Amino acid sequence: MNEARIEADKDLPIIRITRDFAATPEQLFRAHTDPELYAQWVGPDGTKAQIDRWDATTGGAWRFTGSAGGQEYGFHGCFHEVSPTRIVQTFTYEGDPDGVSLETLTFEDLGNGRTRLHGQSLVESFEARDAWLESGMETGVNDGYAKLDALVAKGAI
Image (cartoon, rainbow, N blue to C red):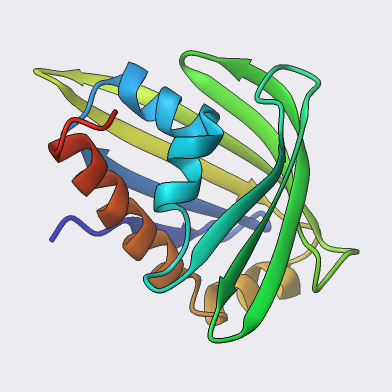
């Protein structure tokens, strides 16, 4: 299984995520900007995502909920930059409305239909960063990316 590498920066309250995909940069960009595709892969297994608002353009906003086991969780943010090689957005978990992160995704073309996704989340403090890392976020990240792999493999993207 191709798991994401999740690392904490020792000098800044940043989490970095790196993962390779058997997909082109264009496919990964589309998976992150098309709301119908995004809802199919985001989050841990067993979670259903419902997109409430999705304007994946520079200056646009987004909101979705994830539900599992009778519980619902909301997330929202703004797209600050959307280009074929980079997405910059804010991310807020509505259960912690004061916690806003600045997220940057880049798509590195490795050739031969492979892409390395680089993600970076800048949070407000080292304590917040450590809480994210201890929350079990790696399960959601890895389950979601495995679902994204499956969508690419079956030609849905």
